[in-house]
Length: 131
Image 1: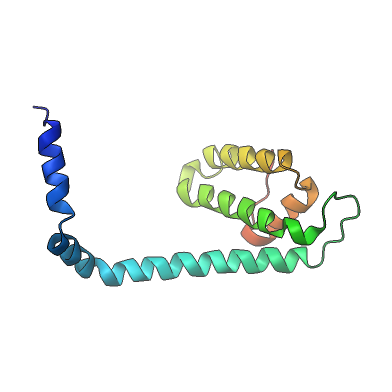
Image 2 (image 1 turned 90 degrees about the vertical axis):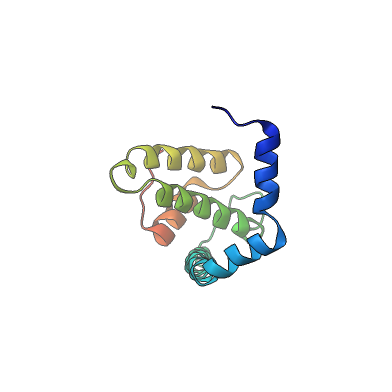
């Protein structure tokens, strides 16, 4: 039997009422904080590795100074990291590599240097991209 829209809306309204939501968050608070801590530490590590690697890169032919491109390299690496966290185990080097290649090509089309992007991904994630 399919629930009506009104029943679904009433259930949602009850779910987000102040006391119910507060109790739910209070019950999961420790787990939520530990997840956020792990994710934040991972992202900071990636950012530090990318910045450290790019500090040693000398690019002569870029249309913009490298300092302006650092955030884009960080975002690209974070996107690829997300793909490899999503596709674990057997799909990691099948579907995961395909998705990473798509992201890699997207960032090349946006103007990032191919060699530098490959190097940064290898340095930060220890993954060799084959687009």
